[in-house]
Length: 158
Length: 147
Image 1 (spheres, one colour):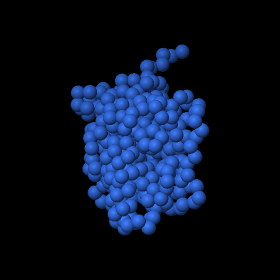
Image 2: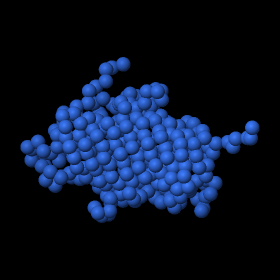
Image 3: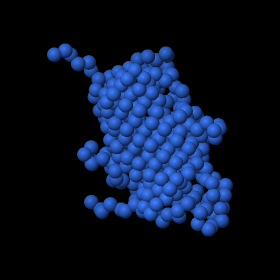
Image 4: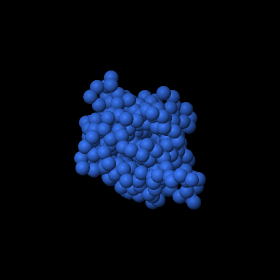
């Protein structure tokens, strides 16, 4: 059996480090596998969308799913390039449980030379009981690679 | 509208947004012109997703439009409780630049339980939208039983 190349963990982690939104909401990469990324967002007071119940805003889940989906594309590509979300569809299954961290697991199941297709699921306890699911399409090779600030990332300065 | 003067509706709307922590994180406020509401999201560094372009985070633009739909529903229907998104589809048309973003929602249909809402977000020119959203919202969400 031929040796499988190690998943490209380093670049996508830098994506979060270099993203002000990812930092502000404390998104964290918990796993990078082949074409798959799992992110965690801790439950933060500023994420609450319904002050009466403490349930986080749907928009937080939107941002986390979008972010995880983009990382899954990088995980599948294995190299940095500019990507742009074309569309993102989210189905909200149930409110997230107040106080629990939320996870998003995204899988880039198809890459063409210009498009990446991704499915993602957001959950608080287990992926079998999702808070939301998402389907997204990304355009590849749109300008500069995100977050590879000068002096950082494998293709910095390009 | 609920038969209230526009100023009161606008005040109530901004008071409602002030109570929502995530609306405060996004930094949004509402402006009313008659029965037409515009949600405004001034630029802030924390809203950036790609610092090289730089571009607003796609999730932020989506969240902003979702909030526009919820705000429009709250003034149009006069909901006692916040509506809850069932599904949303976001299409990204242009990269969101680091400037103020605006959005308006159009309620396409209100049923007894579900509303269908379209939202458009733009920056410098209304005719050059940066993104669109269409979604279904539950008007009378039932609280899940406490587990």
